[in-house]
Structures are given as C-alpha cells and as structure tokens.
Amino acid sequence: MGRPPETTNSVWYAATVTGGHGSVLMGQSAAQLWGMLQQRDSLPRLVEVGRPSGLRTRTMRGLCPSLDNTELHLRQRTFRDGEVVTKHGIPVTTPARTQIDLAGTIGPNALSHCFTEACRLHLIVRRDLPILLERSCGLPGAARVRRLAQPWVPELELTRSPLEGRFLIDWVARDRRIPEVNVDLGIWEVDFLWRAEKVVVELDGRAYHDNDIARHRDARKDRWLRSQGYTVLRFGYHDVHEFGETTYAKVRHLLDAA
Image (cartoon, rainbow, N blue to C red; front, side, top):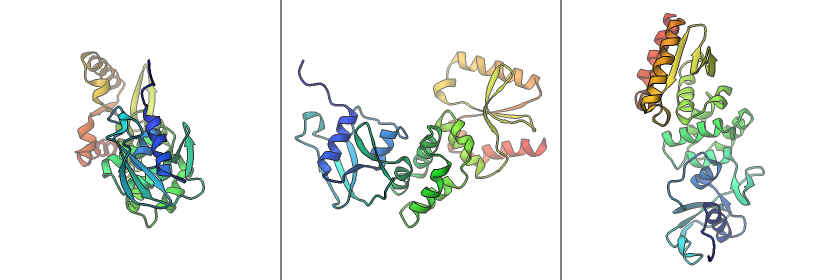
C-alpha cells in the first residue's frame, strides 16, 4: 500500500538530479555503485557528486522523509571524455576515474581494497593502467595510484576475494616470482601455487574458514598436499594486513630454499 520504499539507486539518482546539470556520482558513492566498496547503511547517508562548478554540502531534506538525514557533497570536478558512463540510469565516473578520485580521500588500506576489488571484478584491466597513471598525475593521491598500478599483474583478475587480491599485489611489489592463482592440484584447489618450488599459500578469511567443517576440510587438504611433497603456509587477515613483511619473508625463505 502506498509508495514503494526508496532504494540506494534512487538516492544516487536523486543526488545527481539535485546537483544540477552535469552532475555525476563520484568518489565513495561511485565505488559503492560499482561494487568496489560495501555500503554500510540501508540507504546512503552521504552522497558524493561532482559537477563543473560549486563546492558545498547540503542535505537532501524535503525530497522524501527517508532522505532527511542524507548529506549531498558537491565537488567541483572536470571530467574528460570517456571518464563518465551511465549505470542503472545514473551518470557515474568510470572505475578508473573513481580510483583516482578515491586516492586523495581515503586511507591506503581502503584504497588498496578498492583497487584489488576492481581488478577482481574486471572493472580495471591492463589497458586502464596508462590512463590511471597519466590522469592522476598532479592530483592528490597520485603517488598512491602509481604504487598500486605499477605492480599490476593479470593474475589479479583470477583472485576471488579482497584478501587474495591484497596478498598478490603486495607480494608482486616485493618479488617477481608470480604464483599461479586458484589452480587445481589433484582433487583440491589452492589459492597460490609456486609449482617449481612446490610451495602453496592458503588464505583463511573468516567468512569461509571460521567453522569446524571448514577447519576439518582444510586439515584434509593440508595432509594431502604434504603427502605429495608440497609445503603449505596458511595466513589470515591480520597476517596480510598488519604483519605483511613477516608473512612475505616466510614465503620468500621457502622459495629461496627450494
């Protein structure tokens, strides 16, 4: 009965209309639309919109009751040809341009997450890298964009989680012995494999490994891999995000000793 509830897409669309001619969804809002960032609230409480002129913040009060506490941040931005597309009827910056805008506004861990997610979802591919490097030059966060883009490898597109993407991009920045990603070994699939050295790295994210069934399965996999002569290393979220140098040193030590 009555009007249907508002959706996230309708909020984003309303924000671009409210922003006026030439308004485009950008920044974290664009990253959420593309799936590079997860939205925490049922409806956005902050929407970022770029347009040719005007820097200000306003509420979207009066459009409908559910938007009374939603803030609209209007950023003055100039977009080149090819940097704006339409998705779900909403004008939005491309994934590559979104990455550039994010580089100056969010922390390095969040930026790395967005980049690896974009690669995993095939939103950013090799042909986008020169655009990222050239377009970000001189803008806030340009150095961060370069650090992410330079060690890019095609294997990023084979990762299946942000944790895998983060591990791979951080590894390649330190060592060019690139592993096979999500490859079959016997009846098992392993996350990362250095075949010649017979080294396997498994990443245990809580979403898929924090229960008795998963732990039992992982133990069976490890026993089988070791019976075939493979050395298995298992790392969790904190090993990759907080103790990266120690984690990658353990892998390098095994590869060097093989």
